[in-house]
Image 1 (tube, rainbow, N blue to C red):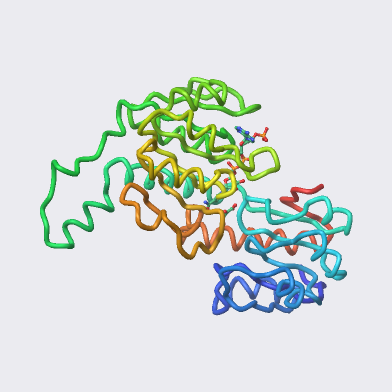
Image 2: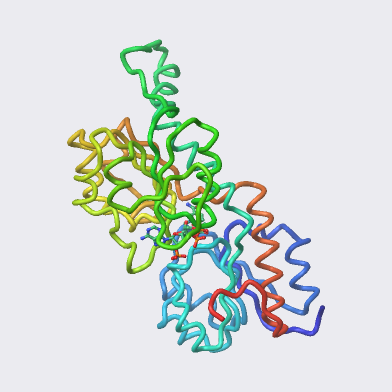
Length: 318
Ligand SMILES: NC(=O)C1=CN([C@@H]2O[C@H](COP(=O)(O)OP(=O)(O)OC[C@H]3O[C@@H](n4cnc5c(N)ncnc54)[C@H](OP(=O)(O)O)[C@@H]3O)[C@@H](O)[C@H]2O)C=CC1
Ligand SMILES: O=C(O)C(=O)CO
C-alpha cells in the first residue's frame, strides 16, 4: 500500500539503517525514514527535537510523556518495539489522536530464556566459576553453588512472559508458586497470595509491568520477609524493586543472590551490585535476540503503516 507521506523517525536501535529491505517497506508506502543517533537513553528535549516533524516513531523506551506528546502535533503513531509501556503516557497519546502499538508474541520466549539463564547463572555460580577458570585456578567445592531442582520458585506476574517462564521451569523439577491478581490457572503452578509467595519461595522471579501499583512492590519490608538465602530474578523493570533495599539485603547476607536485567537507572553506570559475586547482571537485553530484533522490527513497521492508513493493528490505547 502506498499513498502515505511524512517522516518516520526510528529511535529503536535494533532497526539497522543498512536494512534496506525493512526500511524499503516504509519507503514503498511513501514515507521518509530518518534514523536517530544510536543512544542508550534520550531526554524528553532530545526526543522532541528529533521527532518534531514525524508522523510516526518506531520507538525504543523513549520518554513519551504528556509534555513531549503535546510538542509533537504531527505524530499519529508511536510504534513501541517491545511490550513494556511505562515509558509512554497512553492517555495523553489517545487524547492527541496517537495510536500506541506494541509487538507482543515476538519476545516472550526470549525473556523467559534469559530469566532462566540468569537464575541458573546465580544458583550454579556460573560467572564466578568462569572467572576462576580464566584466572588459572581450579577451585571447586569451596565455592560450590546450589541446585535449581528441588527448590521452591515463586513467579510474580503470570501474563505473557510469566506463563512461559513457568512452562520452562516446569521442566526443572521445581515446586512452582505463582501470584497474579487475574490470570487463570496454570498447570504445575500453585496459586498463592503475594505474601505467601514471598514467605515460601527460595527463588523469586518478577514478571510484572511497571505501574503505579507495582512501583516498589519489592520493598524493604518485602525483602526482609523473604527467606534467608532467597534469590531474586528481575527481568521486568528496575523500579519494581527498591534497589537500595536489595543492595542492603545482599550486603547483609540475608539474600543469597540476584539476577538482574533491569535497574532503577538505565544505563546503569556504577553500583555496589557490580562488586557482588552472587549477583549476575545484564544490560536490559532480556527480550532481545537476533531473531526477536528482526521480528519485532518487522511488526513495528506493519503497525506503523496500518495506523497511518487508518486501519490500526496492535493498538494498546484504543
Ligand atoms: N527485560 C526485558 O527485556 C523485558 C522486560 N519486559 C517487562 O516485562 C513486563 C511483563 O511483560 P508481559 O508478561 O508481556 O506483560 P503481561 O501484561 O502479559 O503480564 C503481566 C502480568 O502481571 C500481572 N500483574 C500486574 N500487577 C501485578 C501484581 N502486583 N502482582 C502480580 N501480578 C501482577 C498482570 O495482571 P493484569 O493484567 O491483571 O494487570 C499480568 O497478568 C513488561 O511490562 C515489561 O516491563 C518485557 C519484555 C522484555
Ligand atoms: O518490551 C519491553 O518492555 C522491553 O523491556 C524490551 O526492551
